[in-house]
Length: 313
Image (cartoon, rainbow, N blue to C red; front, side, top):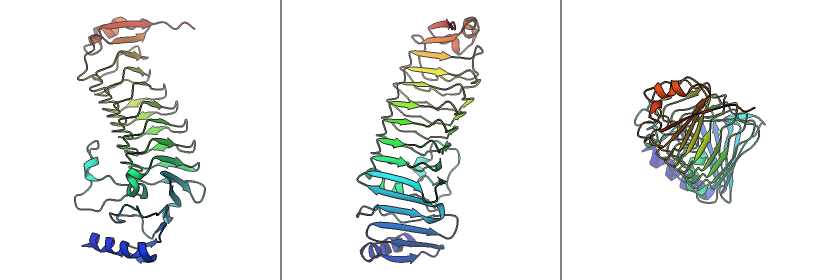
């Protein structure tokens, strides 16, 4: 009943432009081209099922001090007060497959304004001053092709770009230290990604299903690559695994086109990162003096070619 009432109210305010209090302490101000949501509590749980397709161009979540502006396919997000983060939002239940926790059935989905535009967004600019991209911030923006992330951002939350299937490339700034779970899961047209040198963790399923990703270099700063991080990257051909990685579980599941794997650690990482991958024609490059150790390991000995690399500097 609540959903029906909210949507009927929306039809009225689109035409006339009014203020509505929804009983949850949230005042919604809507006009023909703008939406302002003033939050008087800590949780925005429901803003209706409408798609904002009637010319609205500006969204403001006042409590978060953010401005969301949409024009000609471009969504621009900035901090009204110069510095702040894009908050966490909820996933619909069908997007929760990569996480262990579950949203309680029947509770409303907490969505952000970007999710109300979805297929209308083709480019995204996150302006300087944003220091965090929250969970599920831009999931499902299926026609998004480019993203500008400023140096002020230090972390990217779980599922932030989940299923942005037409995103082709993204440069993550050097300021980022953490890439959360499922950040780019299902971004099947992503062909290139730069992981900055200050990242220490790559989350669960972070790049799973990026079917057109062909190579990835993981910087030496990374100390943890969680399960399935690059699973189902079916066109991935080359990968470099840094020195500090000591455990890998199912990380490259179904990456069947791998041709070269370079490992910087002379001690083979524990676990099996290559499930469902034939390694007989894949070259493994290991540090000088480590060939015998890898050749005796029950997982790494499956590589058809094992070569040592000598530092020529």
